Image (tube, rainbow, N blue to C red):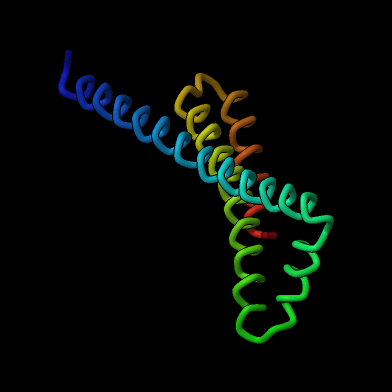
Length: 121
């Protein structure tokens, strides 16, 4: 094996490790944000809507309102970013396996679409 072959093998192994670790972390972030929202919905349902009303009312209070609004924004951003990150990893994995111009065109199109999605958000 040449020196370039061993470098490529090491880089491929490192890329797979980073990809699998990154995917796991991004999935966990997204799942946790969804779980928190689901739990909040269950609490609201169990209290007959009182928890949701209190949450909404808290937004009108100066300091607490900023906190509750930022919590909602943070959960939304975590869900969105984890989904976009997973898409980016998948595109990167496909890009690493490109064999021809047709494959490259498809990957480029997906990457361009993801970029536009990020730019809008």
